[in-house]
Structure formats: C-alpha cells, structure tokens
Length: 307
Image (cartoon, rainbow, N blue to C red; front, side, top):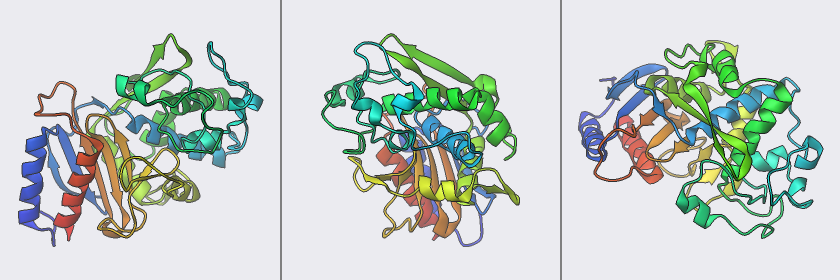
C-alpha cells in the first residue's frame, strides 16, 4: 500500500468493488500503481469511454491544423439518411458536436431503448441552445474525423496515443464499427484493458504530456475538462467529450471522467495526482447494472483512501 493511504478506506473500497461485481479497477497515483482489483489485461468494450478517447485524437488534429472546430455540417457536407438533416441542423459546427449541443436529433447507431425514448423531437432546439447526450453527435464526429484527417480512428489511436504512452494491450484490431439502418454514421466501438485505460487517465492528469513529450496539447485537455454545460446527471458537467466533477467538492478543481454504460470509466483527480480506471465485463454476473453514479462513488472512495 502507498505511504499515506488509509487501509480501512481501501478495505471499504474493496467491499464496494466486490459488491458491485466490478471486473477490474486500477488506482494510480503520480504514475505509480497503488492498488488493483481483477485482471489488468482483460479487454472489455469500454462503451461510451470511446467518445473521450476520440476527443484526445481531435485535440491532436486541431493542433496540427487538420480540423477547424467552427466548420459547420453544411460546409463539411455532412448529412444523414431520410429524414435528412434540415438547413437549421446543418448550421451545427464540430465544436457544437464535441459539446453535445448540436440540436441534431436524428436516429443514430448504438443507442439503447432508453436513449431512443429520451431523444428530443427533431427541430426542438437549434445549435448550441441545449445540452443533450446525443449519440448522433458522437458518431458523426467519428465520420468527420476520418474524412478530414484521412485516418482510421482505431489505427490513429494506436499510433498517436497508445504507442506513445506505452499501452501494453491495445491494437487497432480492438476497434470495430457498429452500423444501423437509420444512419450513415456508425459507432466506433473499442475494447481496452484497465491498465491501458489507467495510462490514458495519467496522460490527461499530466495535461497531455508523457515523459516530457507532448502527446495531446495541454490547452486541448484544459478545454476538454472545462464544464461548458450543466447536464441531467446531477452535479456532473460536460466539456469536450469528457464529463466534469464539481470543483468545490471532495474531488477538487479539474477533476474529470470518461464514462461508459455498465460501469466503464476513467477518473482523473488532479489535486491528489490520481488516475483511476474501472471496467465491468459483459460476461460478469452482477447483482445489478453498474451506473455512472457508482463510478463516481467508487472514485470518491479512492479519494477518501488517498486522504
């Protein structure tokens, strides 16, 4: 156990991990492994954590001048299947999509029934008028990235992020696309291990720097973990494809999350130099579904243990 960590608090965390049926949990402080649960090399579909990973690729492409965030869907030639996008919807920019504020509520790929039921009516909001956690935005960002960069997302993540930060397990073959008859824009699904996700957390913690090398620009990380919107998820805010935690609470300024359904998460807590990765395998028998709120609670227990 790392010096200064609370053994009783870690035992409480252990009990919670077991009670939820979390497959893998990795706790890293200042780049050093503090504690881990479960297999660290088991690849799991990280669900919506994929969006935060794509966000890091966007930061690199923007810095290289390959992507202009203020280009509109109309200028980009982005549309979708019938019923096609309206002129008003096509005014949305890449920046609006990154913030989940596009106002495009077209059917899309990789939505569960709850997301479909919650989707607002078409035309009910214009670009930047409201925040809505919208898979159309996120999937279209995948299409836009590949068109503007000429680069496959999965190979790009491997060469531009996984290799530079020394990921042990991820390969481009761990990505796949999920299509839906309703939309032209597939979801870009990715499987990663807990130890590789912890490295992503450490990269974000260090503002995109890895052993003295800039992998993702620091300014982009700062923008990504800025709460541009309040959300419907309690006290969580939303930046550029990353969730934010309230700065005034136990997590402190700059704390952020990548969250995926069924318990997939990366947590970053700068004030304690913490990066935490959590995975729940689909094959794991659990007493109930692990929610995003559970990931926040587990991160809180880690913070309590770190003191």
